[in-house]
Image (cartoon, rainbow, N blue to C red; front, top):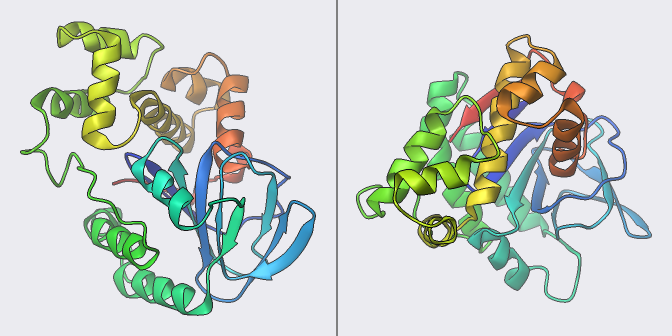
Length: 262
């Protein structure tokens, strides 16, 4: 079973990687195993580890072996990604997590999520677990979220989030169309969205588009149909974006994959 959690500024994969190809992402990584070690190939080194933080655009290979891993991919524009740079990645491309930190992270996940078998329960438990994981890693920020602080958030951004969440396709003109409905310029809307949510609007739309494509794919559609349904220009465009995000093919995810919007 592969679980993919889609957040506003991140994607989390609970997965065991099956010999992925060398790849690099546009997102910063926080990866740790739920038991045992996994193998890393980073730059010119090969080494086992139990937890690692990796910067954006750094070629790497992660092989899980027999371990189930949690792989958080944080959008480079997000406040969490910026804090990862400050806490772990100043003047280096990656940093290993110490044993005590990994132990604490495993405990948080196993206590908070492993007994959650249905999607609704997982969605309810995830925010607290996610916050605790970031706190242990020194990465928690006070960035507002649509679900937690909708009252305090600008009503225009609340409206945008609701509209995007309801979309079953993200066409290329999504930003100008939404800007027009709110009587804002595109630049003003994008600036306001980043200010209110902590992530760029364009990056948020990419994550939403990938989510829609996977929902279509897992419902039985072909990769081509799933890509076009979500708003990608072609199946190859979807494949490229997906590979840049996850480092693996869309074919890796099968009917046992669950998508959870958090």
